[in-house]
Image 1 (cartoon, rainbow, N blue to C red):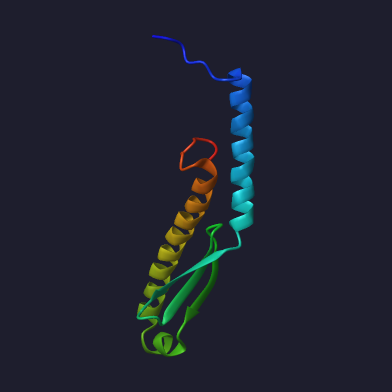
Image 2: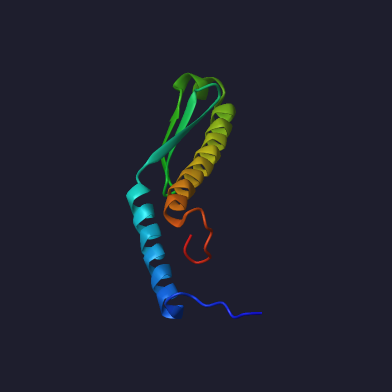
Length: 108
């Protein structure tokens, strides 16, 4: 079995990894304030989350909250979880553009 040889050696490989890490960080920073929305209870609950995976806003129809507080709160939690998953997926898509879809431990 022939040894793997990297063009430019291990130092070039480390430089490439460093550049990719920097591009991933720049991508995270550039997209952290983008948002996604999820709804629940037939649109009476709306949750907004940032691609940095933070909740930004929760809107609950006052009539729903007044008539069925538990349903409103359960719908808010469910919508928040969906929004956070969507945010993670969107950020992963943006990072995949930089990494070519490769999952690199310690970088992505």
